[in-house]
Length: 168
Image 1 (cartoon, rainbow, N blue to C red):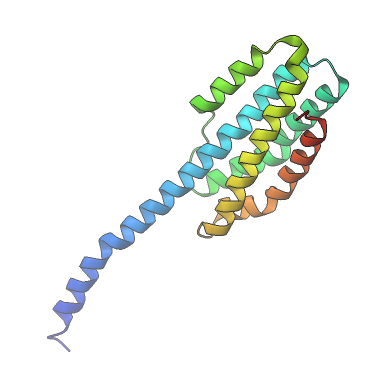
Image 2 (image 1 turned 60 degrees about the vertical axis):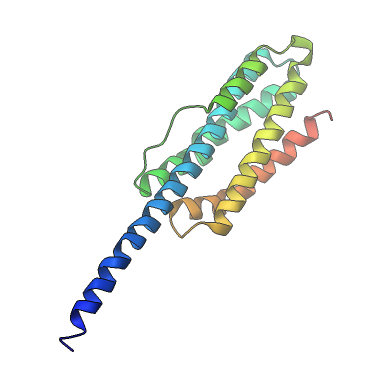
């Protein structure tokens, strides 16, 4: 027994970095998911604010209000709580991709704005749904995985509503 103790300790020391590497990879995965989802959520909020001002049809303004309420209250608060429960800080930033999309929406010709807004929402919601579905299927257990499972249905509902207004 005493002769095998150094071998057991050596094996444990060899496997320790593997466990640390896996834990770091899981944290990186959580961070990437949280950053992407936060960026998409912030894009939807900021584009809704633009739509509230520039939208011509009442359907645009009503949808923008719904998105604002959803992203600030239900979805947004729960996302921030899940991110914090994972020991991460929520990122308030838009990715460069979504900064560009917001800029394009802000610069859209007025007559085309309503359709541009709904198209941008459909694409953002598709990305959110895809991201959340993949994460809930592949990620390790935790607050973010639970969040994704609980909120993907609400995003699908918004997606269907946005599709109804979007012109192909």
